Image (tube, rainbow, N blue to C red; front, side, top):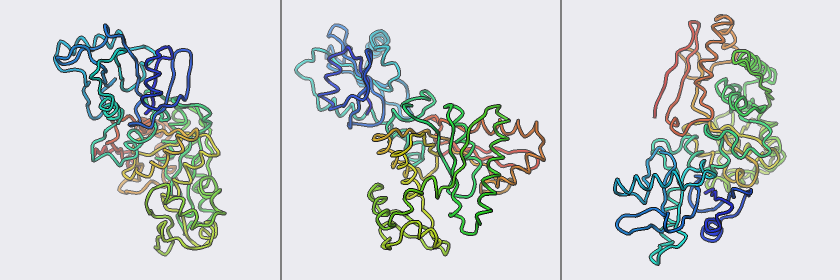
Length: 426
């Protein structure tokens, strides 16, 4: 968990350092931020109170410690110190007056007595603190990309609706891409993140994943995506610097000279179990524990193989070793792979921005709309209708994704008559 204390609160600082084995990550004259391996990703504010100001418990007088949530989460967790209505009102009133303003942005709080009684159960407090620092998701949502971000990744490095610039540091650009030749919805999500953060963005597409695509065709789709982006910027009246790249170069490039079997071991070790590693045009698939060849990844690419999702995301997040960026995390159904970001968020400057589930399809189809088709629709609709439609879709792009919207997916069907929007809920 990430911990915040007032720098002048010696009791709280000592508790965090010695009791929670937390390490200082940042300190100012007013606030000290620490990081502990205990618990979950929430930002927890810790402060101490003298006995005469401490909260009251159930029939036991003054409490040794009180844990409580700052705001409701998807799964409500009541304050541990509260039982009766009168005591509840008193404790809430005390929090409003005694909780340090410097800790106002925290998600949960621990207030503890500067003079604890002999019955102080430190082990139980640690257990409760670990629990309250976790973000629990409904079972049906737990593997979605947004749920993985909020419940399992370091909170201080997540771009949220409440904290757009959390952990900004040296971040220089926003980055995302598509595993195919094109995806206008994913491009739109990337652009919105960049616009909100005031940063340029990079968007990569993976031509090798479509074996039938020639270099000319790959470049043509990239050019059409660029045209779509220009029209979107005109509609929202915002200029965004976009660098279109190939996945082969931008994501996989530094691993291309590496022996594929060694790379497969690295991916498997990072994920924790065997996963799909490569696909082939003939329908074959290799998992990480099946790769025994001495060939390099580049040689396998030249022989018709292309990277599976685990290899792409391993390579993508590991770029944090050499570049400082915000990674857009799509709220897809198979979001478990984004756990790979955790190491790079802790060890490097990587930040992540959860983005809502958004599909843009041609009417009557379930696949992403071809950008050439979308450009034809723009021309058919005319400038005014195109801009109104784009702004409507832009509003559907939930970036950063709010924790309470993880179960929502928007599907846009575009045709000559305009668009139809369907909302799906998990």
